[in-house]
Amino acid sequence: MDQTPPRQARTSRSTRETEISVSIALDGGAVRIETPCGFFTHMLTALASYAGWGLELAAEGDHHVDLHHTAEDTGLVLGDALSLALGDFSGHRRFASALVPMDDALAEAALDAGRRPFLHFEADFPQPSAGTWDFCLTEEFFRALVTRAGWTLHLTGRRGRNSHHLCEALFKATGIAAASALAPRTGTGPVSTKGVL
Image (cartoon, rainbow, N blue to C red; front, side):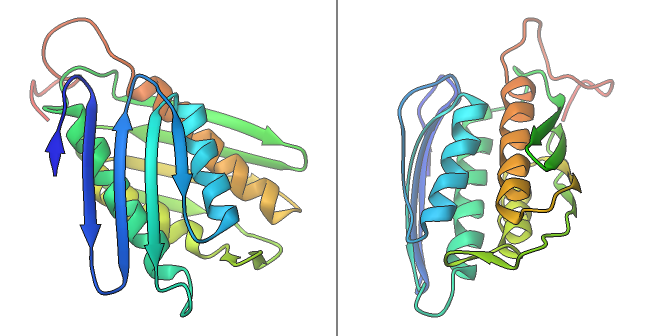
């Protein structure tokens, strides 16, 4: 893993199950994502686009088994890159939230990018899958992401009759919240009454 300032990072992970590489620029750039699942690629593209990131991500894994390892490890590596790109966590706004409607679906994301990893995930997907993506993997991806990124993230699917719409709204809401929470701020030190994160 290495950091390339300002607010950029590259990292990778190689295991017997997956090969993941990520290059991220928090302040923008090209979005190029390759995964073995078209739906997952679509969701990651939405996340990066609404967050305003430049993101190059390549993920390969044992999808002949299923996509669980690929989804989880992608979250881990992306989370590592986000943490590296924030450096000492002192130069960003930290808190944000977003409410996103998508046709029948409504999703909410509340984010604290403050080195306190926690995920609350609440969403009922009416259909179990889209293509090769099992919607239960959505929570696994976000749990891995927040663990390594140092985020507290409350994700709530308030309603939705179409699982594709609901899942996409969750990814978009997270991206919009991240765009604000990770935005640079003026002033010195982290956003904390303690003076340290």
